[in-house]
Image (cartoon, rainbow, N blue to C red; front, side):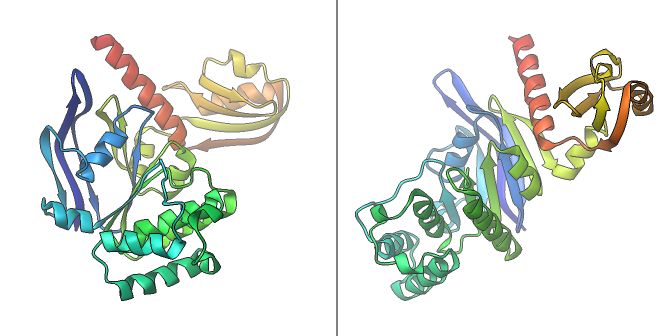
Length: 306
């Protein structure tokens, strides 16, 4: 089932086109990466999905329906910019947020107790929000986002400001919700997290689609042109080899992107002549590399068309 369908949406502010005729859809129970550099159009797209602003063209379907009320009741949204009612007690904030989602008090109270216990904050239920640490407040806001069991969950930089333990907690909750059938839009700048969690991605830059599809398929389309090499000795061959397009050298370990028609075995022979090889591995490109290369090429094409 298609939980979300984006059909040719465009949004312009004056002379600036923030989103330019983009299309994508997301199936039930998927984690979908909405990726792009700052100013790419991610936030504008999210605001249109949330019906905070309307697209100039195109349409957005939530569970096949355009009805605003149905859409909002089925969405949970955790914005990058966090905000809580600091003088209110934790339980009262969560009751207020649940009421906005048309939950009755009994069901809301049961869910509040369930989630506070799940994130380790049950004893803070009657404390004021201002008494909680920043990380605790973020977990409370996460509860407020999922308490009404949304079909579509939009998380904008959900790990921002969290320590590694709480990042792992939120990650586990995301996977648990996905396995229960929740569809998640994960908007982030952290490519390592997106690579580990996302089934599909949509990369947007300057308001336009750059990449869209299954993450594994996208990786395969970029080819196995990457080498990780660990060596002892002289690494000058890394600067001289005609087989190397790009190289990140860390002293005795290097991450290499080969030229399009390069021969990995030839590079290995070059390396053996100069140093002792401890590791030579052909690997698929990381999402970070794909992101950098795709956005850079898109920027160059844009400059050429101006």
